[in-house]
Length: 207
Image 1 (cartoon, rainbow, N blue to C red):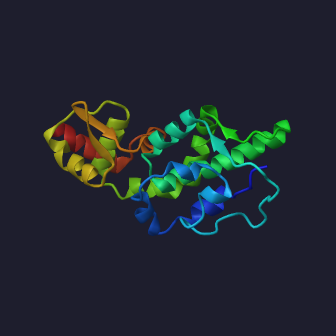
Image 2 (cartoon, rainbow, N blue to C red; image 1 turned 60 degrees about the vertical axis):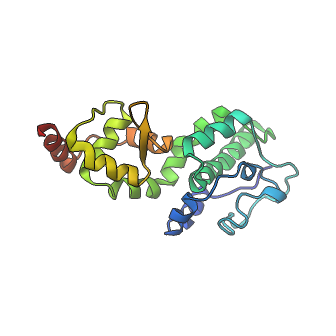
C-alpha cells in the first residue's frame, strides 16, 4: 500500500512565510516517485507524515506521463501546489484501493481531476491570501480574465501592472491569462462581486 498522509496537517504546516520561497523553487519531476530515493517530502519540507504511516509497501507510487503533465500545467511547477495535489492523490488512491480491494499504485489523469477540488480546499489559505491581498480593482480584473470577458481599458492599466508584478497574470495572444491555471479555477468558483468590487467595477466602467 501507499503510505498514508494527512493532507490537512500537511497544508497547515505550509501556512508560513516559507511558502513564498518554495513557490519560486525550480520544479523537479523526480518528486513524483514515492520511493526512498525520490521522497517528495525529504529535505523540502521536513517530516510531515501522519503519526502512524503504513510501512508495508514495496513499490513506489507512479504517475502516468499525461497525469504528470497535467499537474505541472495546472501548478506552473510551483512546488507547494504540486505537493498539495500529490498529498491528496496519495489519500485518494488509498481510498480507491481500500474500497475496491486493489493495489493500484499508478496515478491517472482522472485521478488528478478527481482531487482538484479537495486540494484547493486543503490549500485554501494559500488562495485566499492571494485573493485578499489584491485590491478590489485587481480582483475585478482577475474575475474578467478568468471568465474571458476582460476588455482592455485605461482604468485597468494600474491593476494589470500590479497583477503582472505579482506574477499572477501574463500577456497572452493579445490579452492576458493566469500564470497558474489552478488559481484561475479557484477564481471561477468564487461568489459574485462583493460591494468593494462592484464599486471598483463601476468606477472602471465610467472611465
